[in-house]
Length: 326
Image (cartoon, rainbow, N blue to C red):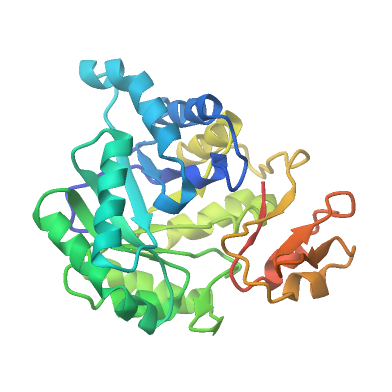
């Protein structure tokens, strides 16, 4: 696969990246060796871009894969991947610790990309000024090569691209607009498209998340990727890949080898709730026609797998895209 420059940075990435969250504890919960094998397969298949986060607890998977591939890196048979991570830390001290932990956990001197994780409305960015100052300092010191934000919120993205020093925007975008927020309300994909295009015109590198809407758009596999990859300004689509088959399908699409009308096998997949994203609004339970979804004693959504029919209706009404198909 070709590699393209990410904005004005010196980072060159493949048009598809591997989101490592999928193999981690909060989602598939694969054993480290098993998950690392998926990462290794992705890198050996030509993908050179990985996304992780402090919150995901997936550094051990990446480190295991990097260690296994060290001979290939040293010989030049394979280039080291571009790695993006992020942290929810709001303070300078918290972000400094997050950067240090990432570097030590992955055994690297400098992190390619480090972001403020899941920035919401404008007050959220303002409340994390200390963390942003730490990122600016880390970049000056060479500990991080590029900095920015990840977000599901149009207003946060629009504000961020006006922020001095921002190199990277990692927004949520898909053809159905699932999970896109405009402040406290649901936003539209057209609004996010404008922000993405503007960011790229300003030299900000943009890579996208949730092309499949948390797995709920897998039935429209090629349509979903056709939409995301055609958007002006997006350099790479970050996709959650949980198996070697997932990797093979993604690589085949980006190498134009995927059969026309391809639909992945989802017979073994199930609907899950990302408990870190669920805000307990109850919209999913109200929408569920099979009575499989309810709120537990902590006010968090849970799904009875014996009743779930995989219709995906719950995902369409979730304001935080906490309902995913894995």
